[in-house]
Amino acid sequence: MSTLGGMDAAALHVDDVKVEIAGRTIVEGISLSADGDVVGLIGPNGSGKSTVLRAVYRMLRPTSGRVTAADRDVWESRPREAARVTAAVVQDGPSDLELTVTECVATGRIAHGRLFGSDRPEDVLAIERAMRRAGVNDLADRDMSTLSGGERQRVQLARALAQEPRILVLDEPTNHLDIRHQLELMALVHALGVTTLVTLHDLNLAAAYCDRLVVLSAGKVVASGTPSDTLTPELLHEVFGIRAQGITNPLTGRLQLAYAHEKEMNFS
Amino acid sequence: MTSVLTVVPLTSRTDHRRSIIIVLMIACVAAVVLSVSIGSVPISPDRVLSVIADHILPWSVSTAATDVEARIIWEFRLPRALLGLVVGSSLGVAGAVLQAVVRNPLADPFVFGISSGASVAAVATLTLGLGVLTAISVPVAAFGGALATTLIVFALAQRRGRVTPGRLILAGVAMSYLLSSVTSYLVLRASAPGQGVSQVLSWLSGSLAAAEWVDLGIPAVVLVVATVVLILLARILNALLIGDETAASLGVDVGRFRLVMFVITSLLVGVAVAVSGAIGFVGLVVPHAVRMIVGSDHKWVLPTSALAGGLLLVVVDIAARLIIAPSELPVGLLTAAIGAPFFLWMLRQSSKGEA
Image (cartoon, rainbow over all chains, first blue to last red; front, side, top):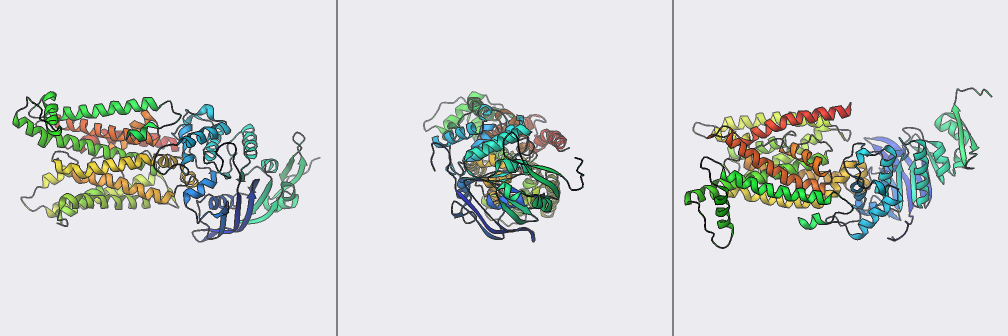
């Protein structure tokens, strides 16, 4: 991979993956692909979105099926090899983390640096560049515990970018962010040009910033395609139990959803 | 160690951290010299230094110390001070690592029952006559006892893959009680008239009094090797602070790494307990104080905890010898007197955070 400019994308394939936890099937028959685009994984709570991601970033080994990243089986690779291709921003960063921003971002070099030993110049460079890209270079010496939720999330993104990944996995990256930071973060992710698999609760963010969507329900893929193909009133009724209709956002020209609870009356 | 410490990118704290390390090194040397010069026969620090110099320098150094003084220094007091330094360092480092891998500032080898596990195994080896070469078999048994206890406590504290601070402490305290009673039983069972029960009891509550040069070798080697390895793995310890999921995504085999860390801390605690008994709370207090000064990057936490732990134990041992002079208190009694209130204070802080 080039050490100079941006990052190049690699293909991610999830092929017929099944995950069981303590004998219970959490997800089954999951197949999806992403290559240089932003793929959103949506579905109600408990539909298995995070489980699919865990199988990709090597947290939860699938019971059957294959996950390949850059043409290599993720679960046959060594952890460090896999982490040189795929980086993840997950939801376990504690709010009282005592590390400084730079120390946190520097953990992104674990997979690249020699296992023992100190930073090489390219490690230092990757850390600085990742912090600039995520817009946290001004926070370098701040303690993580003093940052706002939005700043913390950008630091975690910088930490993932320091891995120089070709595939990025994001689990609810906009959680707890105010609306401006939600939009900024998604715009930043979209502009990275890295293959991205992202779970989102907010269907409008999914519609606006994902190139393609994969819809999960009860541990199975029920639809996939472009946002306008997948976010149909029928599917949203069936999967999320809401009434919804696609409209055009007058400011951006992109797809947006107007939705209402099933029981809500139309007063117009 | 310097080659590891010199390349730290982008941090303005680096200089300040480096000077703290140097100050602590000087303080450790001063504390050792002070510890050697204090006792029923006071010996001035310059005589102490000249006797030490005479022994370690290849040429002979003129000294004003008498032969008796020279023997007191070299055969009794210096090994004791150095053992305090090594044991304190080991406990400081072990505490810092435990606190990172279980992501809990209340972690401590003593609180978790690890020291008790090491004690049981060491006492069993001595009283049941299992060991032939006690200089080797006791530390090895203590290491085994420490590791087994660590794994049991961690397994007990786990529930659906999650470790909660409360469960961890309860499991540690329960194991600690259980193992202490086993140790008492072993001691009482073995104590036929004439055997040195009081000596065993003094060792059990943590004491450096019986230190000899032969006791120093294994703990010193374990300390140096373990600390260097740990400093080189500091960034992975930092990643564990963020979380298991993030660490896994960063390329860390979390389960295996945690196991390796348990083995290393058990080694540190086991060989320390084998020579000095269970000295509590050094591993709790030291890393916590250190993090307030140098931050939480383990590249700095580990060497600073080693130095501060050694310094603390040497100083507390001086106090243990002075408080009821001419007799002395077991040093473990004093560290518990300092550490237990600190532990309670921390427990209060952490339960505030959870509420």
